[in-house]
Amino acid sequence: MKWELVFRTYRPGLDRHMDESIARAWEFMQAIKPYDPTFHRWRETARTKAQAEANPNIDTLDQLRQAVYTSADPELPGVIRSFFSGDIDADGSSLGIQLGLGRPDTHFISLHTGHALGARIDTDEDFADWLMHTAARIINPTIGALQRDGAPLNPDPEPYDFGPGWKMFFHRDSPHWAQAHALATKAVPVAEGAILTYGTPDTYTQILNQWPREQ
Image (cartoon, rainbow, N blue to C red; front, side):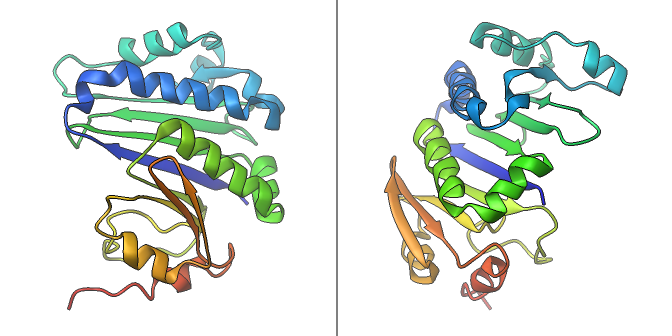
């Protein structure tokens, strides 16, 4: 089973500090490197598999920064870029960086796992906790979630304006802080908020569906 780890950060003026978000993405990439052999080789995605596989390795922060900015359209207010490790068509992982595009001063950093790393998340909750804790500590987001691929989604937006996750991060200034804790089965402080667990990989969507909705 594959998983996606996604974090959103909103702060006024954040679009003037895109280098900082890229550096946080790079630090996270380095932190997870020991846990999957494919994480030692990241490359940009492309329109075709052949083009992607021909792209050079991203070995330094400067190379990551250059790859992000080179793809930027000067007519747009931000940039979105994706990188992959492993086999792009098989068990590879991908990392996404979205800076200010669509939402001003809002940056996204996400990791979409391959099957091998996803299987470890399924069977090793301590590792899932470490992954969330490490990402939240480095990225210092507003909100984040560890989401299983294929988990059922509601047709309407969630009350907390994010996709549901087995483990979620909420900033302590979030208007949803109290309700997020009320449903959680475990809470661990980290960075400027907390990582909250909702049951198990098989039950978290049902638990979060109990979140009160406006009528």
